[in-house]
Length: 295
Image 1 (tube, helix red, strand yellow):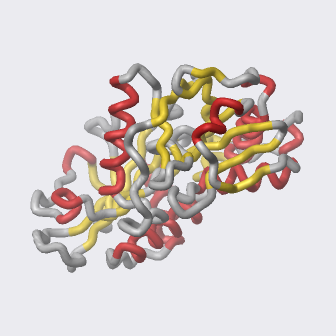
Image 2: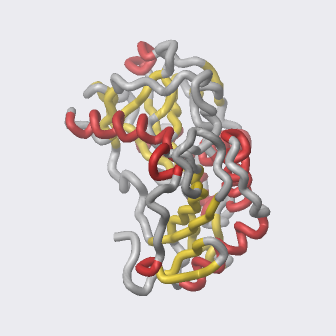
């Protein structure tokens, strides 16, 4: 699914075939989940293949490493160029790009001495496809921000996401909606959350969630299109009276939600603010004018 015998990836300064790539089984990342990564998309736009928000993603990768004490020396522009070379070598335009910063051998719970970079890419549809999603409120909470760096995209953090997603699938849902330690709505395991109520979009405030790059893009679209938006603590009880809701993330893009805990929203997706955001986002990634969006 992710690579073939001809797939090229970047590993520690060189472009090599994926089938020839190897890793250290004593890696601190493998044993303890101490690494950082990004999920980035490239699109075939009106102006050729373009990586969406490439600079922002690689800046966040560097920030994630700095926040948890992983010494990572690459410059942002160098990372952007590697990503474009990777697309070219694999003849990709619409693609998902995964840079991973991982650590060398270290069985001690201290910062690593050796740090490596792997970057790969593959064709990947939207994480949830185009269907409307059925979510459930998860029994798993997002971690206490005093225990982890919530604004860092760290590999080990995603054990929490896997547990929540797996539980939702077992219960017959498409994905989970997680609460924070205080019982407020936080986010999905791999995406940020927005709800619509009386013509206004609401999204959880920063602090207990990953500050997603797609989330910020949605905020920017709202400003451009003059859509009212509030960042605040959202009580779980408010979900029942919401008009509509959606998830957003690089992998998911803009994904409409049909129901939460089997309770459907009152407004049809086609009539929601979410569908306007969805079209606005599509215009941005394809480098089209917002004049395509009809509010």
